[in-house]
Length: 222
Ligand code: SF4
Ligand code: SF4
Image 1 (cartoon, rainbow, N blue to C red):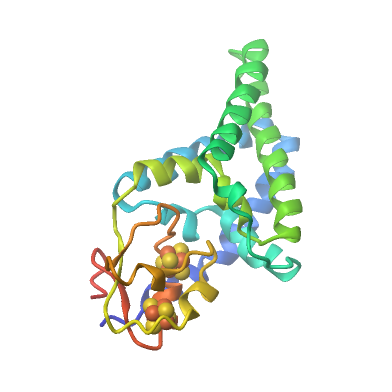
Image 2 (cartoon, helix red, strand yellow):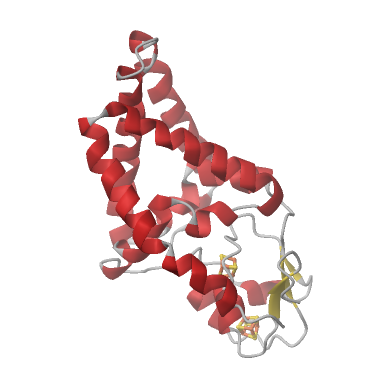
């Protein structure tokens, strides 16, 4: 089995740059609106990668995800997230809220490259505030459980790059404890595949399993 550290460590080293980028975007966006267009890069990245690797983007490539993991984790109460926050209707509602924001704010400034960046900066700010408030109350990655981009990657990436669970699993629950999306890989032991669409393909559970019962086909772990 390939050591999961070899997959995780390079990603962790990128954290500093992604965090600095996120903070610069959040503050700099209000000083120079076109920085907001970076949201489109994230959208294309999350959905593009989503088509072949599910929510892989959300693990370490998303600047916001890194910010939540690094800073919010320190102040979060880290409670179980109520299922409402993952419910398709709740997720769809957030998608509609953000789409409505764009549909109402963009037309009045259409054609003005500078001003058209502002609605994207507004979205980045609003979603960061919502993610931070709920992240403190519940869990640092709660935003990722209903983030519209993550939801799209979830829908597009269903069945892609699935985590495998083999019969060596003793259902100890360690993998659930380390999972930032509060997924329980051990509970998929019977089917052998973690089909949960919100899996970030991060390998944290792979690294932590005392039985070496977890791995990804696509990465050659098993
Ligand atoms: S950590 Fe490994 S052994 Fe424990 S429940 Fe998860 S998959 Fe099973
Ligand atoms: S199930 Fe494992 S690979 Fe998927 S998000 Fe949770 S810890 Fe990461």
